[in-house]
Length: 156
Image (tube, rainbow, N blue to C red):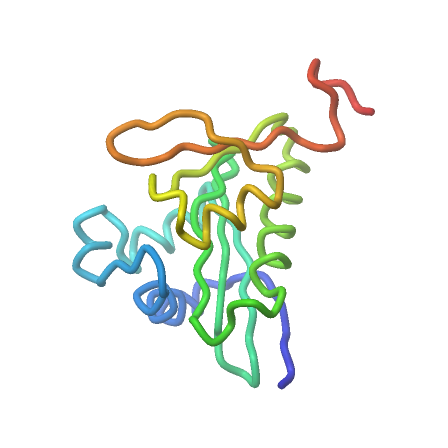
């Protein structure tokens, strides 16, 4: 199986929604996403103004993607099809988004996830150096300090 990683383009948005509604954990329907204000139109607008992301294609089909928000330092979303799990795709996608956020000068980045720490995603984030930060409105917030900067924000 041939895999290709590349930056997300506006034309990829329908594939992003197909993947996002098909995840094993934290599954959300298109209607759930719409209620959260996440539609193809809002995602395209975010991509034009504040967000950037990467996707993975396996044999020409999108199997996973990740996006970050450059304005807030948020690791906004990572989603993989169940058959793409356990192959290093999530790691590569997270590396790309985290690297982009670090390149913008963020000393600390953050994400929200489910409060259920038995979920696979939680272990994935912890193994990457993400730490629990707070629980708010039923979401677990996690954060990660730039590994190439000291606690005072200076380069190491």
